[in-house]
Amino acid sequence: MVLDNLGDSLKKTIKKIANAVYVDSKLVKEVVRDIQRALLQSDVNVKLVLDLSKKIEQRALEEKPPLGMSNREHVIRIVYDELVHLLGESRELPIKKQIIMMVGLYGQGKTTTCGKLANYFKRKGLRPGLIAGDIHRPAAYEQLQQIAEKVEVPFYGNKNAKDAVQVINEGLERFKRTCDVIIVDTSGRHKLEDDLIKEMKDIFQAVKPDEKLLVMDAAMGQQAAPQAEAFNNAIGITGIILTKLDGTAKGGGALSAASVVHAPILFVGTGEHITDFEVFEPSGFISRLLGMGDIKSLIEKAEETLRDKSAERTAKRLMSGKFDMNDMYEQLNMISGMGPLSKLSEMLPVGFSSRLKSQDMEATQEKMKRFRVIIDSMTEAERKNPEIIKSSRIKRISRGAGVEHKDVKELLRYYEMTKRMIQGFSSDRKLRRNLMRQFQIK
Image (tube, rainbow, N blue to C red):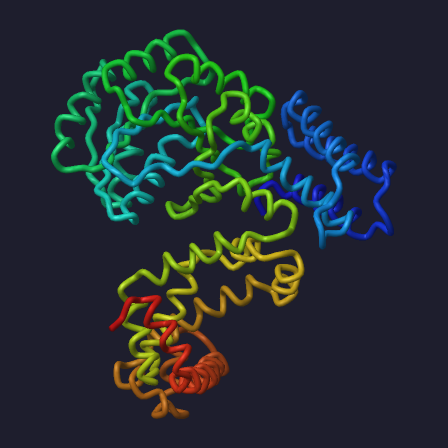
């Protein structure tokens, strides 16, 4: 999970409050010390930690809980509110025509993040383009070019260029009529140096970007704040993107950097894949850390998957009561399209996610992959009429899929069970109306 150690420590603190017989000053002070320790161990800025703990202690001791809320619930709410406040206001990048300048040191994941951001805008219906403005790092040009090909967006760069501003201006000229969002990758350094800051300023003056986004590795630690401040003083950072939040990084230094420069965290990278990229929402992020889940993000992921045309086709067939192996295949694809089950479980409250873990999510994920391979090994006639799949066909399909006979039989049982459920669903008028609204089907 994102920031495992910090999350585990904060969950223990919340559990301590929830299990307390009554809330008194001794418990409040103990809770505050636990929170201080958890945040400091995760590299959150010392001054921010002290300010936060004072606010939590003061509010917990002085404020009376609202009607209908117990003292324990009130203290938990205060902890939640102040942690959200620590991360600052949320902000989403506007979905409109714009130029985005990406900055950061080497090794922060800046070039990969350019691709993730391009993919994000592409999925929103805009036409992004990538410009290779890093003329110093070996292979920076090739890396961004490969990422652009993977995301299937236009790319511009000049391998032999000596002037970053010139390359970027040429790219802007080329893309100004064909792209809605132009994302400019810029040079980094192993550390902050005068020539890097000068180049950032020169690009900023020449390009006049709408957004200046700082990319930071979650493992930056205490040096994150001064680095963010230096970039902010040079060009005025409008947002921060945190990378590698899926690893073992403490993450607190990078998180607190946002407070220091008063720039919102816009996105977080949670893996190596292009789609491992989430809009950062402070309240949802803190909810997940505290074990309260992030149902809003889970719903958004589901809605994004359901907007796919194949999902709409499947929905229409479900309403008609029809269901075959082709529909089963689309259903498995939709679930897989939402991401690994382990990541989805992070968005559920603790009680639900712990139950999911006990069912061995990795095994379930593997089973879904295996089911798709088995369906791939079927003929079109077998997909449309699974009832014809008997002993001899099971042998042939299992051979083609490289699985055992029992795996094919298990898929057939799962199909029959799902089909019965779908038939029951298709007869429920209320559920059908809701699904029609979801896809705006007339």
